[in-house]
Image (tube, rainbow, N blue to C red):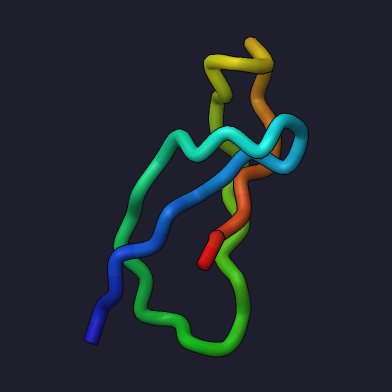
Length: 47
């Protein structure tokens, strides 16, 4: 079962992306472009 997760920028905290995840134990981390920071930063799964 996949669940919808929200990704937030680790630098500014802006919630920019949503994705589907099937992991339950670890928080998802992806390197994405942040419009607020104008750079590629690590985005982490939020609650």
